[in-house]
Amino acid sequence: MLCMTAAAVLWALPATAQESTSGSNGADILGLRGTRAQPAQQAATAQQDPPPQYDPASTGAIPDPATAENADDSLFSLPANADDPFADAPPPDSGRRPSTALRRTAARNTVGEIAAPGPTRENLRAEAVDQDVNMPVEREPTIDTLENPLIDQRAERVQAIERLRRPHDERPFAPVGIRAGSFILRPSLEQGMTATSNASVSHDGSSAVLSETTLRLNAVSDWSRHAATIDAYGNLRRSLSGEDLKESRIGVDARLDLDLGNELRGFGTLNYLRRPESASSPAAIAGTLSQPVVQTVGGSLGLEKDVGKARFGIAGRLEHDIYGDAELSTGGSVSQKDRDSTLAALTLRGGYEISPALTPFLEAEVGRRQYDQKVDSNG
Image (cartoon, rainbow, N blue to C red):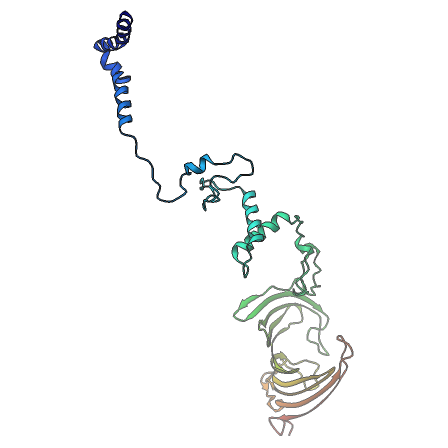
């Protein structure tokens, strides 16, 4: 009886201490630990109401208790999830990009395992990656060593400007020219002095020092197929000392070359010349103050044909001479209209090219001069 009373007192002391402690700071202790009566009540409730058992919707989600008890712990036994069709599924993507080595290995395995009916973009990409990995690196050749037979042989690498062989320029100081439309103009002015023992070029001429001024104009067309040239000049001579002399000359020459095709060429010329008559002419008039002026106007048309190395040509020419009146030293003038005439000529030419620099030829000309007046001043 005494033993039972002592045991009951000892069992009741902890509960009383717990309740007395909660009186001073019961709010803190109860908030953290709770009373001892609560776990006992929860355990009683758990024994009375067992938790509901999990019932999976598909078979095989959880192991069968009977199968788990009879499982073999041998190394050769099948795994517990051998019947699960999703057991070999790859793990979920972690979100990290695989390394380059893993991607190349996967690409090679994919190409070896999958046989596609035709090359796809993925297969070509995998093959390219494989070739880049296994192919040795070769040094690319320089541009100069590349040889392409399709390129024109003349399209070669050009040497430096300092090493180029420039053609010899026969007129290195010729005027550069001024462009006017499709022509290039090259004007020039020349000034000089002349000392002569016979200024008038006559039987009674004397010495003199002359000043000569010449103005020239050259015009050349800039056409791709045909060509045209114009040469004009004016010359003025004056005496500085000695015999008195005053002369002027004017001349214009124009030429047009036409390329008619099939080694056939055509040309045409026009010319004009105004000059004083020479004192040594057999028809010169003596006792004149100055030599009379003579004007010549002419033109020609022709054709040229090349047959192999043979050269053939035909041309027609017309010239008209106009003589001015002679001023006499005794006064008055003498008309020279009876000397005015027109010349018509036909020229035939044939040659053979021995070399590009030498072509011998034969030329024959036949012409007739017609005077404007049938009767001269001498009747």
